[in-house]
Image (tube, rainbow, N blue to C red; front, side):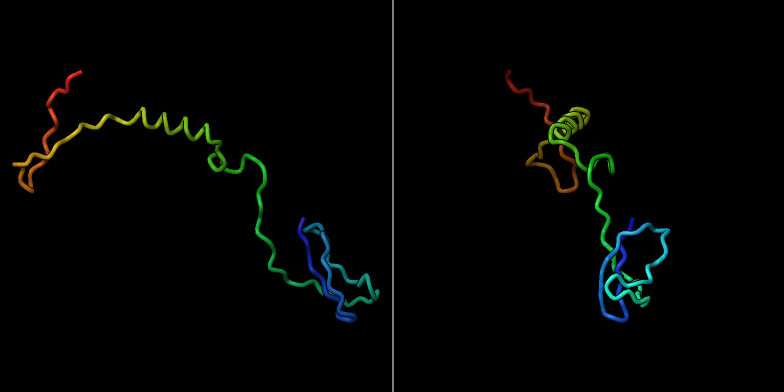
Length: 103
């Protein structure tokens, strides 16, 4: 339900009223009891979503993020190490390292 702003044309009383969207505008001022109220056009407020469930990925726990990163890393294919030869020319691709390291 929105909050509407009103201004009395007679006494200048300005106030807000929480009303249903289908309710008609108020006409009678609560201070001077004259029928000179006008509903003001307000800028409104931004929508604030509180709680869980608005976007599945927005507010993940740290443990979930760590597990997701671990899973992502384990599914990536292993990259071959390449070494750049001193004799390699600028247009040549680097060759894979085929030397075995002692265990």
